[in-house]
Length: 598
Image (cartoon, rainbow, N blue to C red; front, side, top):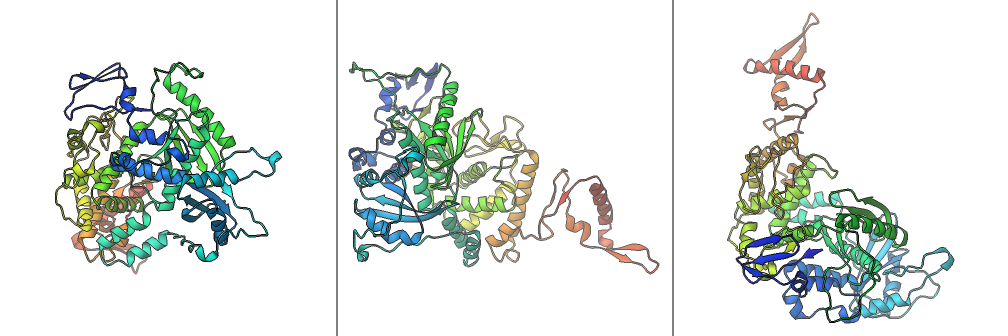
């Protein structure tokens, strides 16, 4: 549901009348937007049906795709050639491989287990015709007890006589199922020789793996296949952490559904489709469509459970769990700007190999010390924290500002959404401005903590558009300008207390990393927040900061001979007795004091 606008000049001025009808660029009145959309390669690709003749694109078409769309197109082709087959155990590998190979050459066969649903193989054929032949050979059983849905999700039933289609000698060994646990990540980090190696190790073990990406695109394709009979050009595109390069293992899948990506009328045709009338208010129509789709998914799509409709939110969504791919999903229909945001983050991550490892490390630190939280609340989100890291890297001269990328944009980079958001920026990474900065990951990590430990959050806002801090336009505790919707603050939920906690945590982390004696284990100590008594502490329910060590470290309560308690206080620290009394009074009033672990 986006309008991909094209223009003929890098320097343009944008005038919009009625927001949908007129667009003028450098005083040139453009043709209707359907003419501009006709040559959109990614949308044409996404709206192709699952047929052999439409499966692959030529190399010439791939050349004009930007890196993000190349990634999307490549993964969608993988999903089209794939099936998911449930088995009794991993021991079914050879029998299943032999059976499926009879339908065509197998490109890859990956094993995974889904929570409470058993064992599965994801099989990718080299050609989509093989996948179609396999599905056409499948059958239903117990016809009177089922809804006869046909999909790419199957199960492999056991028979007495094995398949024996090909020799066991021709079956490749089963790929190992690499199980990553938190303990394994910690042990691997501990075994590294330097903080730089630890950061890269954390990224390598934490990032969304190949099977995770495949399962998410397969989940998206399942939704397309369900609706394609009514909407031949329907697309379900992943966005967010699943595709922007910053996704962790087991991250949720965000999807945007579009019934008709390219809206154009064939003026030469005298035949017109009969259709149903849409509601005059687009939001009302979106809610009604999503309600119907949710019901369809709940009753007819294999593996779909726990469907929840959240249709009164600013962006209506459907939340559901796909038990066969073991993926939590959020589906929307009016959020194309989020896809462009995913594209921008993907390009920033691709532009420098240090970006993603640094982001993963800082997000891991923030989660472990309690700065971020998986549930909703007044704290900093992973998305806001990622933007803060990218802003810091702009400050270091490693990443360009969005304003620079907009100035360098070409005519095929122009994107205007239906709500008039300008999502134009240079999408060719080879033409991005680059400077030589050989700063190690360890130094960047330390500089990040120093940078935000001294940042003026009270009066300044973070702007990736300008790559510098700007004056706040309201009194939000944390103001991060939405790069693609500059009137919005993506961190408006954050309150003053959480900012104070963040600043104190960055100060503590900076002090820890600067003190090599206190940080002998590198990231292990950082994540455990091992700190000396000189670190900063905060009151959860009071603005005053109290150093707990100063209150108690040199005060010892002793029992005198006459049975009375006396305080043996160091003369150099007499004021601490008064502070201790103040602390007791605070405790009586119910004020909780948090002591950071030492």
